[in-house]
Length: 132
Ligand SMILES: CC(C)(COP(=O)(O)OP(=O)(O)OC[C@H]1O[C@@H](n2cnc3c(N)ncnc32)[C@H](O)[C@@H]1OP(=O)(O)O)[C@@H](O)C(=O)NCCC(=O)NCCS
Image 1 (tube, protein in one colour):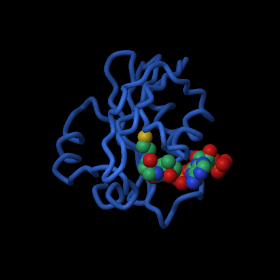
Image 2 (cartoon, helix red, strand yellow):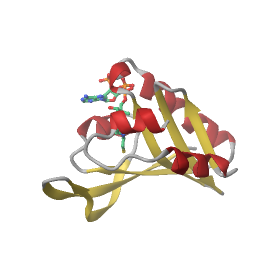
Image 3 (tube, protein in one colour):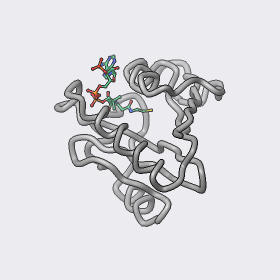
Image 4 (cartoon, protein in one colour):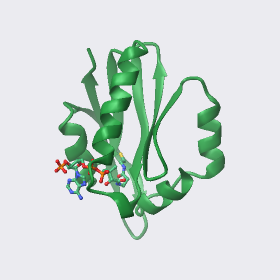
C-alpha cells in the first residue's frame, strides 16, 4: 500500500508503511483492493469516511478505482453506514470526477488545507453522499 500510495500521490506527502499498519490494526478500518489499487475506509456508526484511494500509475484508467469505489460503498452499507464522506484537493480533477460519478457532492471546504511544494496551498473540498 505504501509503495502504491507513494507512486500515486506525487503532489502531497504519501503515507508510510507504519501508518498503514496502524490504520489496518483498527477494527473500524475497511481495506479494499490489492497492490495495484486500493482504498481504506473508516466506518463509525452510520458514517463511512474514505481515508484514501490510490491506483498505481502503471494501472490507472483501467477501471480499478471504479471497482473499488463500488465495493467499499456496498460493504459500508452492509455494515450499517448511511452516509459517506471524503475530502479531496480542489485541483484533483480525476478524483473529483470519480467521486461525482457516484453522487458525492461538495458539502464544505477547508481553505488552503493541502500544501504544495513550490506552489500555493490548495483547498480541501469535503464531499458527502447518502448510501441508503
Ligand atoms: C483518482 C484515482 C484513484 C483513479 O484511479 P483509476 O483506477 O485510474 O480510475 P478508473 O480507471 O477506475 O477511472 C474512474 C473514473 O475516474 C475519473 N478519472 C480517472 N482518471 C482520470 C483522469 N486522469 N482524468 C480525468 N478523470 C479521471 C474518470 O471519471 C473515470 O471514469 P471514466 O474512465 O469512465 O472516464 C487515480 O487517478 C489515483 O490514484 N490518483 C492519485 C491519488 C489520488 O488522487 N487519490 C484520491 C485522493 S482524494
